[in-house]
Image (cartoon, rainbow, N blue to C red):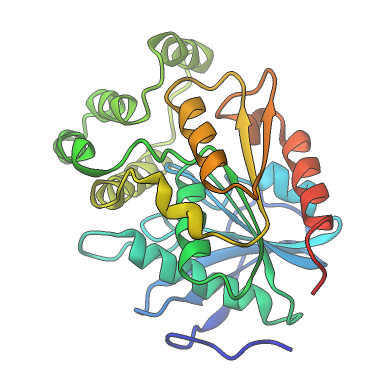
Length: 300
């Protein structure tokens, strides 16, 4: 049986699918968060509900390749987080409290059609948000999967990087914005150079680049208010899967090892030869790991 809406009723509205590259048999709808923020969600497939939460700079497309594999036997919900079009971009400073309320509304919406609790998965910043949500209100969460949350990138040390990024954003200085973000994510210089080389002469779409830049600004605001205290996640009791790439740079491996000891009941999988970009470079690997984990979750 579907649970009654909590902490403010959410409103679900069907939308036209405006992305010509979206998966077959998908459609977009909006979910209203507790404060009235409208979140656009892409929905595809049928079966037990799964919510996939994107990281910084992402959007409706971020989990697309993984979602298409999962949609064979799951109903997959792909929200665009607040601050990322086509979802609303509210005024004011964003916090994880705002986004936890947003994700709770999406989870409630995903549960309603079948009455079954949701498998929740997040990547990067989306994984940090998934941790916040599972710790705050796990009632509709059947299982939790997190891939490399940047738990080291938070708090006071992010504040000056936020200021740098905001200044570059206001000047529309793409190079300075990228430099500030590299300082946040700590991507090694050789990887930054390799990514730039692989892009060649391709010029980013200006509309998409601006949409991503706006989202990053809001994410940095939330990170600057957050904590690096990993011990707070010890309260998470739902079945948890921690995922990481063996080739991801420090301090992510150390962060993930600490998280694995903090949630002692969690399963921890490290993929050889993969990095922080695995959802794009090896989507079948990710989908298969998630599908197996979901199948082993306690029955409802």
